[in-house]
View (cartoon, rainbow, N blue to C red):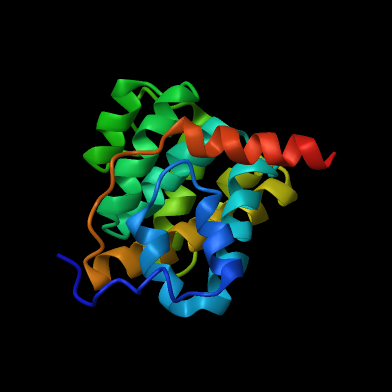
Length: 189
């Protein structure tokens, strides 16, 4: 049970209701976030950007996202994003390795290992070490490194929200959410 009550969604602004209406299904995380009505739209737009407009490879994004929320103890985001990672080509062996905090497992490529170590350090220590950054730069351009940092920070923030407030897990929206974002991005091009 949530540690604070969810807001009355009938009393939130039309703009906030419209944003919640874009979701493929109601989601406790965004319903709880509606307490901060003026933050809801910008947070959801940033989340959409991170899921649909990055140069960072989507599968790599998802395994690093899972790494970030695992380190941050974000059960809600973990449950939501495992199916997305699998849909994007992550393997069961990779999910199991992330679950046991083995970011150097043989099932990960050298690029993935570098990105996962970088992400772990970033979340656990507030910054990644110079050796981790150097290792990642051998595989990834600067733009994608910055995108990775922004994505990890965003999902860590969401984990802090869900875990601190005891937001109940929802059934995974999985690829329905990502496909909806991708369709909106395509429609705007």
